[in-house]
Image 1: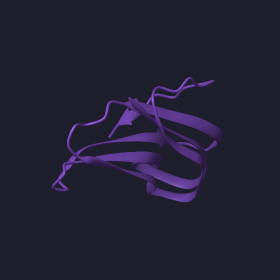
Image 2: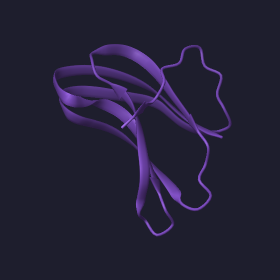
Image 3: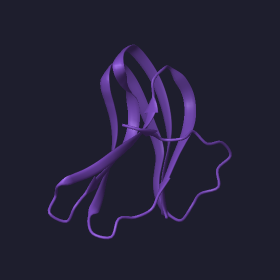
Length: 99
């Protein structure tokens, strides 16, 4: 298994429907076709919050990991973005939201 984790802090001016900020994980086939995507969402203003997403690797393909803000305005801060092999034990956990 792999884990992607990050600290995120948000200071939104406005957030639209399905808007927010997240660490977005994209799964692609070897040919470059998008297979699936998941994101860890922050939809409201928050202090520093740790987000962790654990997943099983795909056999053939690759990942792209992007910090993003969509359908929102304001500021988003990301820190300590980590991609690690294995399941992480964390102090607190916020589940990933399927996009």
